[in-house]
Length: 131
Image 1 (cartoon, rainbow, N blue to C red):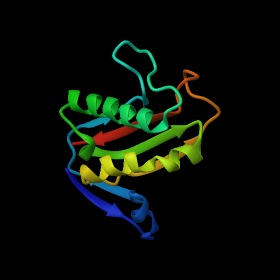
Image 2 (cartoon, rainbow, N blue to C red; image 1 turned 30 degrees about the vertical axis):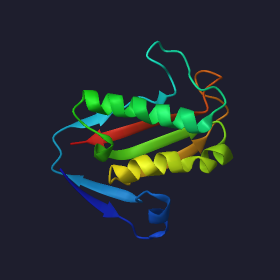
Image 3 (tube, rainbow, N blue to C red; image 1 turned 120 degrees about the horizontal axis):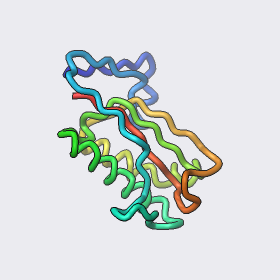
């Protein structure tokens, strides 16, 4: 798989994402359901703690990717849903650090929503990966 960053403007690079990514030569595409701060038992974790919920959401996304033989480095699209955009921005470094360590800047959309599936959840992440 070959990825080519498409950035007619460079301001998004400072925020850790590309405006577009052209993917060629991929053999597999994985569409991941939204991952939130859920434990193995399906119960929400870290109520009221955005940083911890964001980290566990990423752990869960990585688990799905890993089960398909992929990693964060394969992400080409990321959607982040949150009940509190301002609070998420204060903890965005958790996400940026993990993506940076993986050497990836997937196209990203962040949306503020009224609530997620369970009231205790503050953030949910869904992604598309290609290999």
